[in-house]
Length: 391
Ligand SMILES: Cc1ncc(COP(=O)(O)O)c(C=O)c1O
Image (tube, rainbow, N blue to C red; front, side, top):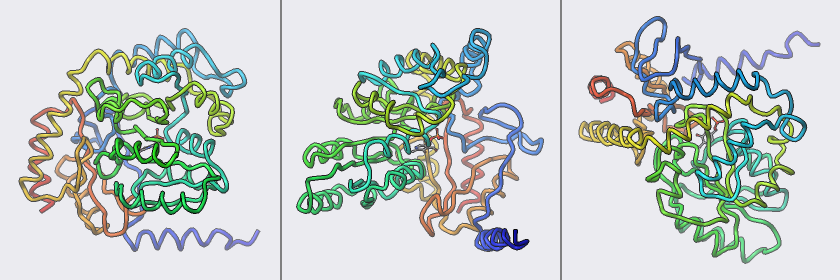
């Protein structure tokens, strides 16, 4: 092998460093809590998706430990071979009930779910209409499917309809799919699901909504974005994750029985991977119990969202169109965002800088995320520090 065969890596890494886009891992010492330790220092965590504060919840830990005692740790095989155990089936049953669908299917992560669902439903010759700000896992699912990808401007129903009309005039032969984040992961705004689902009906498209950041957070019962808009439509393909507000790990598809049977047979990222450890499923079941029985957690989160967003906006800080627990602070320049993140950390506030390719060029930002159990004192302090440094 030529000794210079990997030299491109040095060049690429140097390029990333020069443009302020090189990424490093931050080590969290101890459990995920509103305050964590980094380099031995106690800091306020403002960039976790552990929205309801469940990741270190005693009931969830207990459920996992009990499941380990009963089932051991590993699942030993993929779901279709011998890796379907009682907690997998029970979790799917609970998810279907929680989402109000006929059936549900557990995937190993949201990334697996998105690439699996999309590549199962559409293929070469088909067309996908995808919001421009959809999550990377949706985009990767679209690319994997080999379907034609048409990206419509963010939440722009009129532009989407124009694209759909043009497509309908050209062809009715192929399958079409409209896909959107429910809550946009980097902007924190909510997709117009009612209008999108109506367009899907009108133009005879499949419609898929990603509830990764809405599950446990949106809707009176925390069931997600469809509940938030009061939409009942059994044709909608719902995907969501268990590793964010639910404090566990994994993801799900929820919909009709035939959709789930189809995914079991066709979704390669479901088929060709070892299934989740049963204890992870048991932890997710305990998390659903908490979401269903402890609505005050959701109320606590929404109180904190209102306080923090208003505080930033009153100080003239650009929080973009955020409507949820994800509150971006627009900085634009990647280097400046990294510096701001460093300065905040020095003052005991941990917020990650988000840069391209995760967000568009010149749209680098701090992505603040709130948790139901952040203390008011910590939020007040963090708000003060951000106001001081982000101006
Ligand atoms: C909108 C959206 N979908 C899917 C995912 C992937 O989920 P997971 O982290 O479970 O792989 C994420 C993760 O951040 C996300 O933000």
